[in-house]
Figure 1 (tube, rainbow, N blue to C red):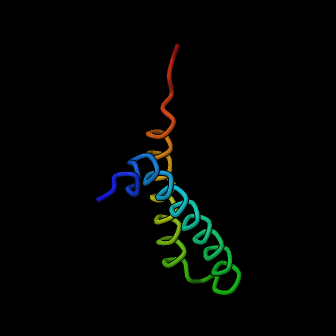
Figure 2: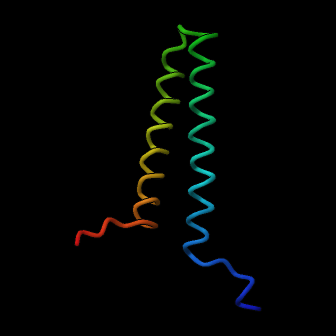
Length: 72
C-alpha cells in the first residue's frame, strides 16, 4: 500500500476534533430546543447536558495533544 495515502495520527486527531465539535454544537441546539418545547423533561435535558460535558472534555484532551502548552 502506498504510504502517502494514509493519514497521520495528527490528521486523524484533527478530523476527530472537528466531528466532536460539530456533535457538541448539535447537542447544544438540541438542548435549547428541548428546553423550549418540553421544559418539564428534566431527566432528558440533564442526560444531554452530561453528554455535552463529556464531549467538551474529550475535545479539550485532543486539543491539548495537538497544541501542548510549552512553558519557556
